[in-house]
Length: 248
Image (cartoon, rainbow, N blue to C red; front, side):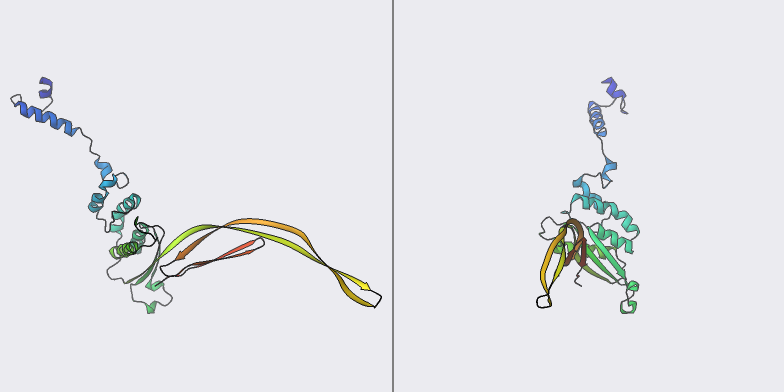
């Protein structure tokens, strides 16, 4: 008991109850509290992420998002607030939702006079379904979240036209075979009636070749239109053409 009293700041005249409380609180103070990891979006336990998002002023949140998306949005919150109202902020906010962004401002159009000043057109192509309950890649919930991300980061004066779609990447395995033929004509003059007739037509195979190629392409589509890929195969040549359709 003397050692315990010596290791505390309590006077020697303290009551046993006070010494008991000091001993219990000493054990509590030795409990590790990982404050450093709690403020780190990449090390914070997943069940604490909503509180961390609120502390760092995350503008939009969905509890059904994958943990990786939640951590990325939290990590980008402070940098995005520093550049809010810029093109970079809009692209960063949409990219956290796994969307590829194409942004064109009014002065970048072919006829800038036909567009309102400070307006912009944005095409957001989703590449991942963030809604576990959704049965399609681009759900209405994701569309609303993409628009919310734009509204929370765009300048208040700007008029934004947002078009959403889907982008998928796939590999096509194309096999082609070619065969070279030679055509030989034989002319046999018939002197009996003094007339030349073609009496033989010989087709012979001279060479054959086979080739295989792996063609990587991207298919983009929107809610109502489909996308087309045209494959043109010829001997030793494979050409690929892509068409994209967007719904405005």
